[in-house]
Image (tube, rainbow, N blue to C red; front, side, top):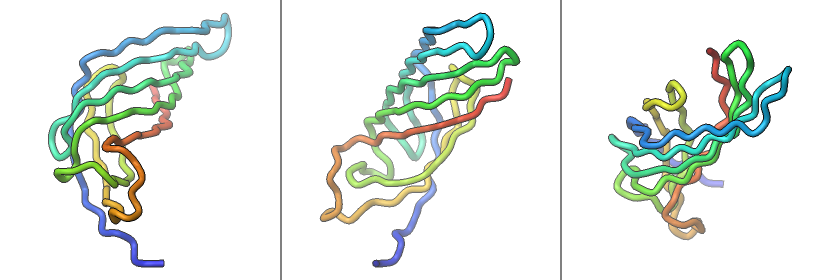
Length: 127
């Protein structure tokens, strides 16, 4: 195995254009289950637009857990093909966010994906 690729830190801001929560199970006791559709744009070191679907379990105390998957169409470091990375974000749901991504690019002979990044987030939110 070769050396690990060098990583670069990218910072960006997310601006939410559309935030559409839709509860699909509201039991008398237990968490409310909600599907949330979000459309957003990225600016800064990450530029582009994203669309994401979250599934959220919201508790009576205002805290929640959610998982989501997002497709981002844009660029990081002037390109996107072969992008790999790990990152995080800080936000209030439905509002803008500060994000960071520690990224690298796979060698061209190892790239099999399209010009799009898919991000899976599993997050705990506390009210």
